[in-house]
Length: 346
Ligand code: UD1
Image 1: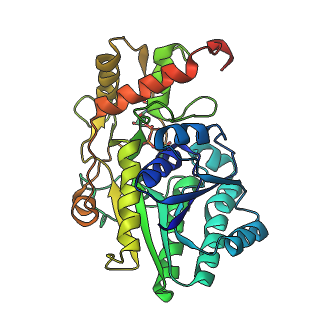
Image 2: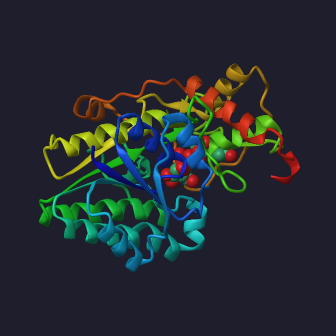
């Protein structure tokens, strides 16, 4: 079986993908700098898949170390590259950190892959590249809109870097996966999302409010031109997202790809409003959520949900879980990680 390098493999989407890879018999090596993750995640991965992946703590900005890593691991059959910074607000405050972490590192890895000869590369992109798309659902052909933040820009430029590199290096095959809104946790509740500080994303804010860690959720705007006035997103279970990575990797390993740079949306195809997500929380938990309507958040698009046809037909992959399934797993996970912790201190 091929050895697969997963950068950022201890993070939210990375750890779930490692589990799916190991379940399919792949040998996994993880690189992570633990900047937004913990080594304990390895225990959860081991409990679920019965195997502890090889782990190297390494900061990919250290170019010499990246070179040394690839020199030592000459038999890597594919790279799934999650390691990146992802906080929109922080990227506005510290753009160079984002350009270095998300683009400098990407260049270093691609340079090493080109030295290797044939190589396969999967890139974590985002639906943020579409901005406010003109048509719903969003197909992969929808135009890329000017980025709202340095974070968003790193995803757009990251895709361009890979595309340009693939154009002149036929030995490199790459797939960019544009995630919509990944949520939830592994149903075993052994791994899940571990947001640092006050969550910026909706789901962890909801579950933290539900458990009493946050007093109240602010719903950012109820005067949008949508049915209930709140924004619409395509929330997808993280296990479905993880499985799509395995499908994309297999496509490259089996040389089924028709171009050496391809792009796929990863969503469910179903849009849900913020109030519908709150409704799901209340249905799944049987508890009322404390929320209030607050002003709009700058930079939010009105609606974004995926056209999933290309991923369904070409990757042979389809999201299976419902919003309620994902919500239940997120809630179970929140309850597990808060058990025994002093709520006020987190
Ligand atoms: C956000 C980022 C996006 C990034 C994505 C990755 C912004 C403007 N966008 O997307 O660039 O790719 O995360 O994780 O930050 N909401 C509330 N109250 C909250 C939090 C969120 O009402 O406390 C609403 C938002 O207005 C939005 C929805 O919930 O309508 C989802 O928000 P979020 O989870 O932050 O995801 P995105 O905005 O889609």
